Length: 335
Image 1 (cartoon, rainbow, N blue to C red):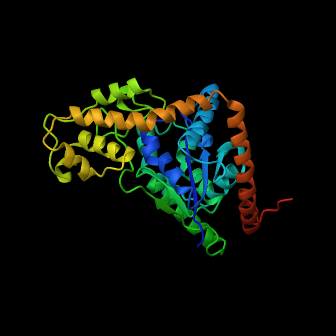
Image 2: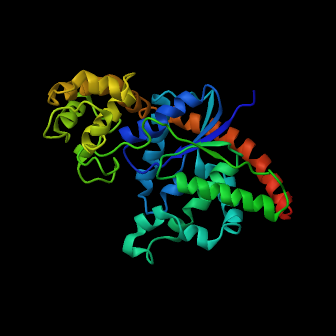
Image 3: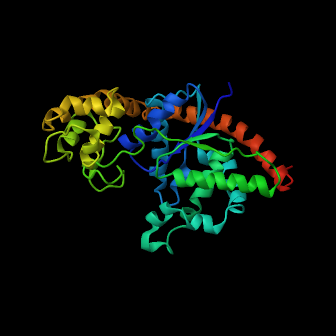
């Protein structure tokens, strides 16, 4: 049985939170057992908006530590820093010349991030999706774990791959990558607003559970989280009409083996105090040890350097083979 090649990455732009864990990193650790996996720290993507250099370096170490703390094994998977593999930027330029302006103009995430200020944002933010395509195609990845907000970018990657294959009469050179979307929980919402995504940019720290939050902080944040003015309903249909409650139940299922219906049946007709207490206990059991391990690893930068250095060498070896083929197909002479 041929293994799938899976690639994904996390931006080093600040404290990682529960949404990063449940929506991405938790699944990374599972996928590595049956697939060839590459997990990068996407610092090239991070600088589409200005980053303080010292903070960027620290955040890069922190994402590396988080990968390890959440169970990603550097023996089974390749952990590396995107900017250290020059092939990402090289292939991104070639794909910029393949991608059409009209395709990029349709990207809704750019419109959301730029808002009314689109003339003043960086061009990197506009061409971000072609760099993402390069990340994926540089390793001929077959599957990419994506949240619903990134699915459009993956569809663009497929379009770019197909156009490259057609333009250069190289059928099936780039595979058309498939999305890997966790069915149960692909997006974790704010603890204060169940209609908004959990985000590190939210002004209120009470809107999210950070992976480095300690036990007392986790308990306090769940206690203050928004629910509803009525008891737990009896059906999933009714729960979906209560976004904050639905979000907390999704989080509960994400850190335990309970299903949504299990939780609804258990707490049906009750107010949310017992539910919140039990959710807090589950989160403390799952998240607090991760935070402890991140803090421990952050004190050993030489070890994190070693992990990134070894991963970068493996990623370079893989990427150089594909990039050489691309250069030959395009007509470049590579001495």
